[in-house]
Each structure stands twice: as structure tokens, then as C-alpha cells.
Amino acid sequence: MSEQDLAARVRGALEAGEGVLRLVPTWVPRSFLMPGGRLKLSRDDLYALGTQRGGIDERWFASTTPAVNEGAPADEGLSYVVYSGERFTLRDAIGLHGPEMIGTKLWDSYKRWPVYSKFFDNLGPIPHHMHQNQEQAAKLGREGKPEGYYFPPQLNWTGNNFPYTFFGLEPGTRKDDVRRCLEQWNQGDNGILDLSKAYRLKPGTGWLVPPDVLHAPGSLVTFEPQWGSDVFGMYQSMVEGRRVPWELLVKDVPEPYHHDLDYLVDQLDWEKNVDPAFKAHNYLEPIVRSGIPADGFVDKWIVYGTVDGKQLFSACELTVHPGHSTTIKDTGAYGLIVVQGSGQIGALDVDSPNFIRFGEVTKDEVFVTARRAAAGVSFKNTGSEPFVSLRYFGPDTHANLPSVGDHQKAGQN
Figure 1: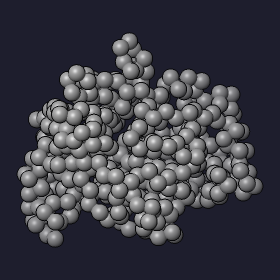
Figure 2: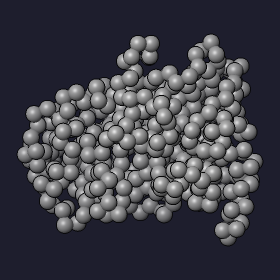
Figure 3: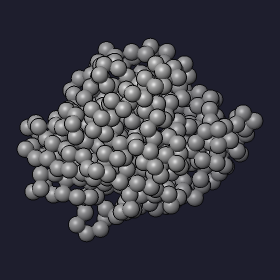
């Protein structure tokens, strides 16, 4: 397809959807994890990409960031727009109409949509790991990755095997303690979880996770807005009796440091990992942004706060009750997934499916351009149950973004 033809198709999709683009489900496998089976994907399709690639345990939303998986095609992780029976990547669409789609400020700063979100869904826990910061990732031409969590109640009808997440390290832990765990990598379980603390996960709450902070996410389905990167380092040698290859510890580390234990330990932000008030500084509960049930809708902040003083991403949960509609204005573009009910978002019909086959085009995911978001998007419930959607935003979108801990203020719940 020529650039001229692609530009015409993108323009056609933008005009037909009035700034709201329908996206195809983007499935991503992880070879070192076991899928939890709660993403509505048919169990017959959990290994649709082959057992050698691993089970499908993630669905990425409005992504222009490729997944970094061994043996993956170049477009794994990229979202596709569907319009008039044809498909093209959201990345290409933004490349052609960047200022309109993500806003002039964001386009001028990044020349891309610099964030994405996903559901991850696992039977058990993920190994204790960290994501490199910007300076560390830049050594390999990559970008750092802070992230946020929200546990949507609609998908967490069961907690699976381990609905607890280890965060950071116990206060008083020394760097030599972590170094010793790395020395014992090939001796079985290296014991790094003995140095950490697990928190019980509660549907309808979340966390903000800075880079360089160890975390071993538990088995709740997680909505995860994050920076547009797929870097990580696993610091746990075994999880649920399964070996974690050393290569997953050093995959985003310059080669000269692959066996430099001091370098690997020094990647960790020590102050944040041993923070005795870690929960107070990172735990999130929803905060009402607008609306009340009597109005027929409630819009809530679900991921908010800053990372090292920077607003990098955020997310909201909108509930529209049966027989009601509302118009929501936002100061930036967003990716959106419907998690319950059916309705209309602008000119598009949407609904949350109960069952998805691999390769099927659903009606539960859209991308809303910055221009459309600023003008206002109508959300109408056309069904008999609550119409609930999650939408996430890029950096520096909101002037009134809450801070971590603001949920404790009087009147918020």
C-alpha cells in the first residue's frame, strides 16, 4: 500500500468515526509465564502462536510499541486500526496525522504515541523483576519503563493461584544480600523473595511502580498503563518451580555487564526499594473525577500521580448506567477498552464480548484522537447493565491530576 493510499484510508477512518478509531485485539504471548484464561480468549487459542512462543497472557491497547519477544514478528504488540474491511497500524496512522491524533505538543515532543496499556493475566505470579530507567535503557538505544496498575473487578472473578504482589525490599536489606541471591542463581531458588514483602491485591485498586523498583506481580488481571517500552530484568531465578533463564535478567543490560553482579545490583533504586512507607507512596484507590450515580454516570481516576515529579501516564474508569448517556471532554488522546456492557462511543457501536477467537475483530477497543477528545465524546449506554470502560492517557495531559495518597481525603472512595 502506497503512502498516498494509506493516508487516504486513515483520513477515511478518521472521518467515518468522527475521530474515534476501532482497533483490533492485539495478543502477546510470554514464554516464561502461564496464561490465566480470563481475557475472554478461547482456551483453544491460548497457544495460537505455538507452544514454543508461550501462552497468550497479555492483550495490548492502542500500542505503537513492539513487544520484545524471542521469535516474534516485527509487528507483535502493535495495534491495528480496522476500517472498511482493511487494516493498518495505529503507529502508521499517527505517523501520518500526528498533531491531529495525539496533539501538537505530544507530537512535537515525541513524534509518536509514547505510552501504551495492556491487560496481563497469569495463572500464578511473575518473577521478581524491575524495569530499567531512562538512563540505563538508553545505553542500548531503548527507553525506561515506569508503569501503573489497576485491577478491574469485571475480569477478576477469580484470583487464580497467587493474588499477592511482592514490592521492593524489606527495610534493612543490604546490597550484599541481593548480590548473594544473584550468586546463587544456578543453585535453585535464589531466595530473593525472602528479602521482600507481599501485599494482598484487591480488585478495584491499583499501584504506581517507578523504574528500578523490584516487583513480582500477583495473579489478578491487571490493566497496566505504562511508558512505551518493553525493557525488564528478572532477579528471581525460579518461580513456582520453573527456571528463569539468566538471559531474562540481562536482556536489557549492555553485554560487558552481563556477569557484573555489582552493576546488576546497582541498577536498583535502593532508596525506593527499601522505602518503609512503600505502600503510602505507591498505592492507589479510585478518586471520583466527575458525576454521581444520580447523574447516570461516574468517571473516576484509577491510575494517577507522578514518577520522579513527571506526569507520564494516567487512566480513568467511566461507568454509564442503563438508560443514560454523558459527554466527556479530555485534554488529550486516549486508548480505551470496554470491560462491561454495550453502548455507543461517538459514532461507533461498542460492546464487551464474552468470548473471543484469535484473529477475531471485536467491538470493545477504540482510540480517540486528541482533537475529538477535546471537543467531547458521547458515551451512551444501550444495554441493560452498566456500561464500563477504561481509558488511558499520555504524558502531561491533565492539569488537575491527583497525587498518590489523595484517595484518603474526606469524601473520596
